[in-house]
Image (tube, rainbow, N blue to C red; front, side, top):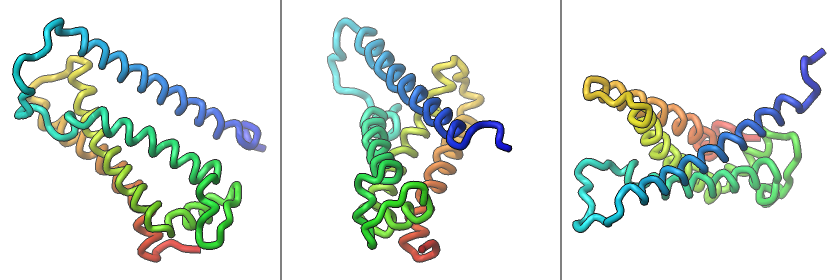
Length: 175
């Protein structure tokens, strides 16, 4: 006998993730407003990008890409709006394995997943790096450790996520 009815745990996790995304977007918006209000006079010279890396300069864009990808991901693999155009044109609710394979057999869809996950990687790298700075744990002694942690988390997530479409396209996984 399970502790919870059939889909209760799944829906609790979904609601938790939706709340986390909402809090994250609210925090990003609040940080943007704080940054705009921090200076009453705009910078008179162009930005100095010697200190800022690619991940920090593209944080807003990678965030937008990730939100759009999240919508696509749900529409493709959860709601079945676009997955029904696979090789056999069938989306079967509950057939997670088959739906993933049918979706990733389409090269444009697999490419979209790979590109979106690379953007997610940059976003995660900078987010992990900035987490310690935002918490006041920014010390040059720990910057090397912070960098390793940020690279490690981003790499694990990206490699894990990208392995699915690559495995399907390479024929390692199939129906």
